[in-house]
Image (cartoon, rainbow, N blue to C red; front, side):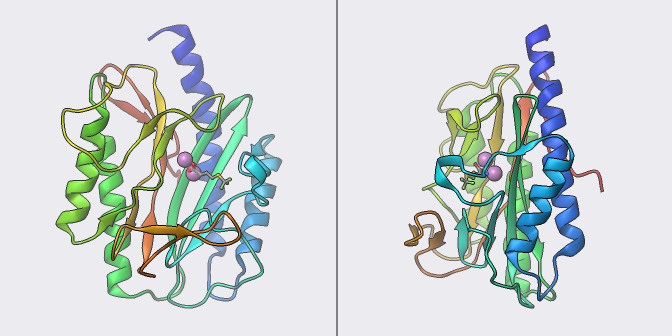
Length: 249
Ligand code: MF3
Ligand code: CO
Ligand code: CO
């Protein structure tokens, strides 16, 4: 591994663990009655207190420090005064920018008691992301990542959102390549040692189609079915991969 790659991994490890740490803090306060704005404030404070910036804040005009996406919201939900209620499922997506490098991660949170089908959706989404991560090493093709996710998700009767994808990340928040969460095995670009990107599948209980609300950000399922997402930032090595956004708790 070159010195450049070592340095980029070290910096991403720091930004990534900060982003994961913010979600660990969110986990302590999620409950019915709390607003998504309170979650946003916590992320903002935690990341700032650790000498970093929240990359989403003012990114292409996004108004908040994290994305909070509940129930049928697929991604890019905007934190607001709206309070969480018993039975909601929530994705919180945070990106820390520290010392010139980004770490991007999201997780699902259960608010109070959630339905069995919601639990199954969350479990399927997490498994799909982890299955795709576990195949990573130099020369794996991008189509192998997509097809691993799609096969798993469709075997469980759920669908893969196609309108949003994972992305290269580093000194820039979003860069090439696009990481599609569906596709065909043995197609596409080969990943190389030192590449850093996100895998962040959005999975719906119903149809895969989405639309954007009039705020210009909030993406929802067209059929109003529940949607879940997890995201890790990963780096490719000759023999495998490193997850930079693993929770410590
Ligand atoms: N964190 C999101 C991602 O995974 C991007 C959010 S951009 C924002 O790529 F502007 F909506 F915050
Ligand atoms: Co991302
Ligand atoms: Co993200």
